[in-house]
View 1 (cartoon, helix red, strand yellow):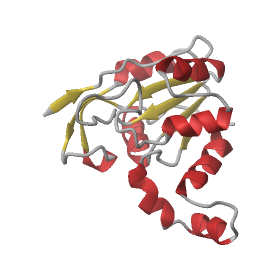
View 2: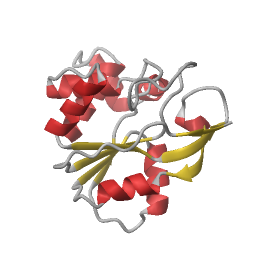
View 3: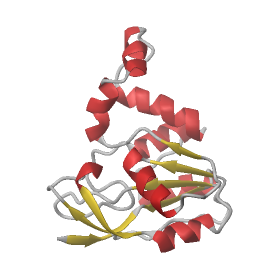
View 4: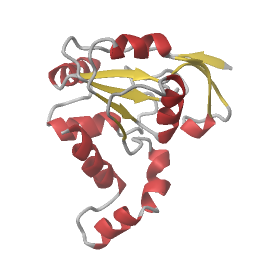
Length: 180
């Protein structure tokens, strides 16, 4: 079944950062109230809330946070097909790239781009190989990334030193490094 992205891009007037995700997760009944909230398991909004010390539970709170911190949001996929019945990027086949939304955001003077996974970065670079804007791959906010994070040497080292207690703290550390 082909799915069409239910959310338009979000572009605050003063946006200088663009976060590009993959595609909203369908939780069996809907895609959630906005961008990365359908499954209820993704850490994206909790991470932003903890970094910027602002609530991000309702759509209004999320848009306020993004406006205050000049963050635009969109996804890499406009139309996708899921190869398996889950939300993992590895199971997404992009049928239609979300070029109009990404172009609209880039046209407003974005100074940094953040990808929520290597999958997103790979698809972005196919369409914008010459773009000269600094870009960074964030640790995936998806719970499916926990296994990958657990195998990272830096993660193991930080846990051993008791600097972090788990995968969420590792994500938070890395998101702060890039977004703060």
